[in-house]
Amino acid sequence: MNVIRIIYVYGLLIGLTFNSCNTQDSSIPVSTQDVPPDFVDFYVLFHTDSTYQMQHILFPLDGRPASGPSRDYDEPYTWEKDTWKLHNFDHFDPALYSVTRKVTDSTLVTEFIIEQASGLGIKRRFAKFSDEWYLIYYDAMNNGM
Image 1 (cartoon, rainbow, N blue to C red):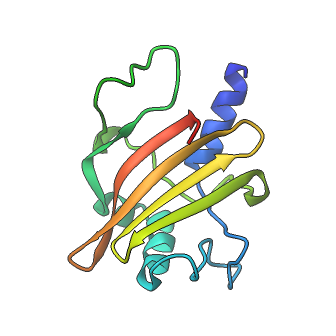
Image 2: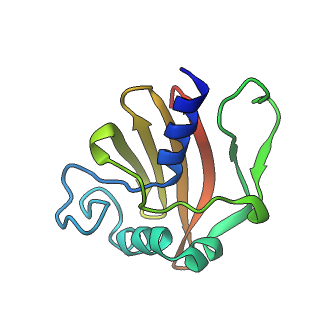
């Protein structure tokens, strides 16, 4: 895969919009059937309000950076508030991605978004603390999610 393709895919994944095939309301990009009920409102607000998003990420955020020749995945990695790139609903065609979520319980949701053509994808983990949802883990564009 050439560098331009990787940059393009990365841009699409950063500009997130997620859609499940069983979404009941097309204006809501996450199904109410596959997540805790209060997660849907959080999810929409998280992706449409940048201030809210920044307040609902536990920085420094554990995860992994995008794959690349200079990345060492044996070393711990954290995303920092001052360099965070906002996640939003721009530039996303749900027909090009598969989105799956694993609901561990009513307080933990893990999400996988995979570009079907390349197999590259992201993993995000959300947790609920004191009646508020937060992004607690972000694995950027990598193979083999």
